Image (cartoon, rainbow, N blue to C red):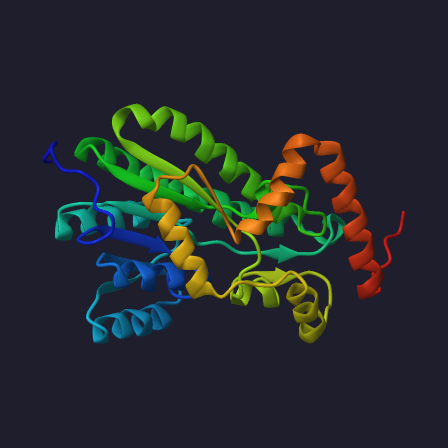
Length: 288
């Protein structure tokens, strides 16, 4: 590969977005295409991905839909290699695919732990493993791993989800320090609350392990002022362009990050109080 190439921001770039057919992934895909990138939408929901790609084409952008299971490393490796062979480069790898499983730890089965670790953590690892060496060879590239505010603070009621997102944050911070000297950028994206299907029961492949009426769940999330996915994507890509290490959008969620950094004990206490309030509202009784 040519060693004198540099990353393109974003016009003329090549980007892969896993989970690119809906929610945050779709918004990022559409915004990348709007800014001139050729985007590969990698998603299990292939019909939806093709629909999004078609709309991008109609609006004058470049997009390709590919059916992918991020837990399947050979498939991820093939996706990356075929993309680079076709376009000659890989500027951005958005390891964005993820699921949510809601409920208290006593509601989990081991299969729930396995599923969320496989998608949310192993899926990110597979994307990195497939893309990183190619980016090293070409001398540039930016890997953006989607975590969550749940990766920066205590999240009772979503312990398995928080476990995977804390791991993604730790992976990304450590890898950023390692990759900087070879010209590869690593960022971790920590969304607050964004108006996506994941707010209504974990998305298509996630699940709620406790019975909560959808309208009650919606009301609960609305208090946290969900951001529009399109506005979210604009702000995220502006931060990606600046090579920010930890990207928190909406920005007011940084307050919770600061609290948890300054006083982890206070962060845990506030999370405990919030959790108890939500449990009471939902009529959930914890037995001890």
